[in-house]
Amino acid sequence: MRRWLLGIGLVFLAAGCGEGSEDFGAPPASGFITNQHIVYSDGLHNENTEMMRLGDRILLVFRGGETAQTGSNRARIKIFVSTDNGQTFVLLNQVYAPQDPTNPNGRDIRDPKLVEMGNTLFLYDISRIPGFSYRDLFGDAWTVRAGSTDSGSTWTTPVKTYADIGVSGGETFWGFWRFTKRQYTVSGQSKQTLFATGYNDGDVAADLFASDDGVQWNKVGTILRNYADVPSEAELQFFGDNNEKAVTLVRLDNQDVLEDGQTAICTSSDPFTKWECGRRIEQRLDGPTWIVRRNGNAIRNFVFARKHLPCTFKRTAAYELRGDLTDPTAPIEVCEIQELKSEGDTAYTALAPIGGERYLLSWYSSAVNQELPWLEGQFSPSDIWLATVDFSQAPAACVHPQPKRACPLAALPPSSGAFDVTGQYLLTIGPVIWPAQALYFTATVAVHGSSLDFTLQPLDGTTYAPVGDAWNVPDVSLEVDGSFTVSFGERPLPAAAYPLFDDPFLTLGDFTLIGKTTSKDAFCGSVSGYAQVLLPPRVSDRLRLEGSTFGATRITGDTLPAPVSSCR
Image 1 (tube, rainbow, N blue to C red):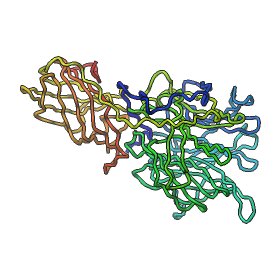
Image 2 (image 1 turned 30 degrees about the horizontal axis):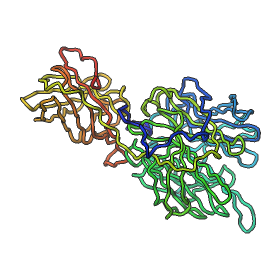
Image 3 (image 1 turned 120 degrees about the horizontal axis):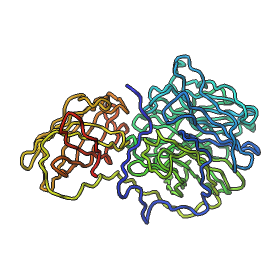
Image 4 (image 1 turned 120 degrees about the vertical axis):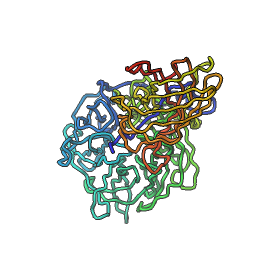
């Protein structure tokens, strides 16, 4: 099975998508996030930001060097430095993935994290083999580590970081996501342990790991293991007088592959081997940064993460979580503070202090004037952004995020009566995941009074030759205004029909065309149903088709007509 992208987006810009209301959705919080600007742009796909203050230096780190989010041996971690409190940055160095003798095509590198341990600054990254990867399956994830003793100017060659996983020493391919130090005392002696949350290939489990030196790691326990929840990036904070309570916020892609999903709030106490994950919030916080602000006994929890709009347009946004995160029985209120300038493929944020309650905030985004679908954004240029966050200006009022909304079906054209569209057509679907990457069929239609017989033949996406079996549905009702609804149920989609995925397990379920005849030579409409990625069927492995559109143009000779994928 050819691997394909973890982040697949649904998109169709329909009326009402992403619009606010009087009761939900956050207007800009005046003075909270200001001075939003692009700090780096090179026409390539840049992503996965990280920052750290080291004395009078601020390091800004991100993945660059490639044209897309897909794994590539050309990717590298770019390291910039500022000596003027984040006003300007210059390139210090670039770090590449380590050699892998078992993979002649090399390795990708991404998700940088900076950690100081003693006199060494560590750069941790996740490295996978190049190519597409759905749920990180077959990505052979490594956590890799480079070191610097001169504040990030020079780095050692990255090496694979091992973890004792407790199962005969076998490799299970863990990628470490968040690194958090725990300061505590034992028998009156001060101690420090570095903890990391990691997730495995297949996105089945999020686990906790620990190290005393940042080099040797041991598995502590499983935070959350559930295939259907798709756990991955987990934020980690410690609370209590001795930092004896741990809380993680775990990203869950559990409501269709591309829906908003949830975040699990998981709690544990020292020694952190057992976790309780019963609480969920209805926001899937992708690539998050969680910062805790304390003022006496008052604690405020802010999260900066990817926001999911209907039809899977994306934004980067700031949130506050209110309530006692350490108490598994306490309710949690989600407040949306502000959307940032961001579109397409975006988020993976970082923070660095610049004085008092002011921090630099970094994120990445596709061009903000194009409103690209998420998947297309992953194959398009993206820039690194900075802004200033002033936590003293955090709003006192709580504005809840908008309730989740489905992607609406495209409107059919005005009624002009039914047409006899008997004949053969090129039927082109603009999939909601990326309308320009079309799916092609020949449609054979026979009209019999107020009904029609409908046959779809999938075509090879490259050669346009027929592939697989034809799909036939007889006696479809044709209304007087020319509208019809034809349901094909569940149908396997040949891999060659959509080479972008080339997935032999791809199946269309509840596949339905809602259309209207617009002339004797054309009909068009919208698509509903879902694409099932893996078997057996699970909601977390589905892609909703709502937002996809189709157009059909009569074939009159040996040459196929120009494809039309919508009503226009």
